[in-house]
Image 1 (tube, protein in one colour):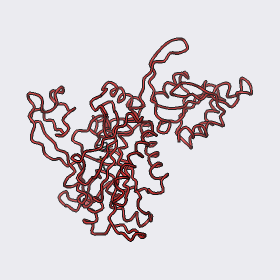
Image 2: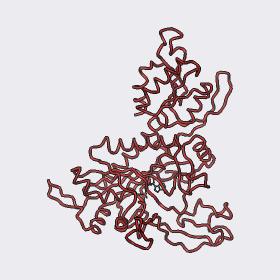
Image 3: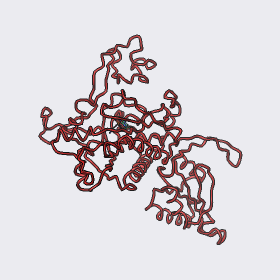
Image 4: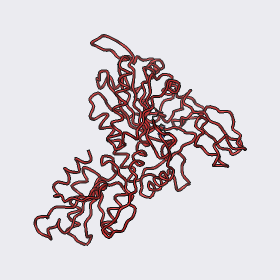
Length: 462
Ligand code: GAP
């Protein structure tokens, strides 16, 4: 059972500070005081996020012949979100405090702070004066078209609150064009937007975020079993990107907490330093969405099984993962500090981001031992050119080699390649064209021929 109360704010503070210092994640519009609930990924963060999305796509589309992809629009027709129930019902309960003027999510007051007395949970301080809870719709609304008038209902569109809806509304087009047979899935990665009342825990609860979703369509008889199968597949995925099984927890969501149309929902949770929190939901949504769009759109979304001659609205199982939350979990899991002792017996603390090589932002750093040695630099650049069309690598010649290693440890680079005097044949033929290959986690080094670098790295990072 997960310990939801266990938190480590000090560790979280160090992680947030490293994210800024090393260029993983910055506050959006920081120059202007910040845009609350929005984040920009810096050079290293952008690589981790891309690697995660690529691996998810590979596992859920490329390596599956029963799943195809979609890239739907973010701006969404209001009729779509009316039919899905979002226009009327996608809201959280909100309370205002008449005293501190704070606005809080009413069902999530624990962990919130009174604006005047931060040691108090809203409602618990002597002066707190909370209003009755009222529902606050989380969708961002906009008006479309140059001549659009704010009061013209036909001009209203929304930024999508989940990627799922375009999958449902394009179900028939995908079915007809790809000629898939049930069970089959449609996968999508993309931005979603929710005007969260209290964005918090760094990127964990944001107003703009990315989702990675599969809508897996099936016969009604298969829904429950497929939900269990998807849960296992998703747990395996998290292990494959470096989140250990013992830090992943499955919550079998009780009926009273499930969406009314869901027959089964599992939440996959992770032990973040701010507590055990949801990474992904695996939900059996029955035929709710397709039926609603069929009814409102007036066109049949039924599936015809040519063998059994059965006609029905497919049911759907939905593994829906948060991309930003997973990146945050990867960063939190990777962060480590260890005491190391150098050859002279001096100890200090090494900060190391122990990313799995699959998601590490830079796969290998390439150093000349001496930047003034033209032959070493030339060989480094040749190695760089060979590797960079397959993966992100980084050339660095500044400072002592030990310091360069440490910088890469903090970036999470799993391998460092150093070109030295042996490489260029100054110490004989035996070691010519070999380099040192240093492992980030153990700090051990091995000697490898340059010709083995590419196949070795490709094997390590796949
Ligand atoms: N289509 C189903 C759906 O959207 P959800 O549980 O509301 O279900 C799925 O969202 C996932 O999206 C969550 O498990 C979480 O990882 C991510 N997510 C939801 N709201 C988020 C937010 N405000 N910030 C970051 N990620 C969020």
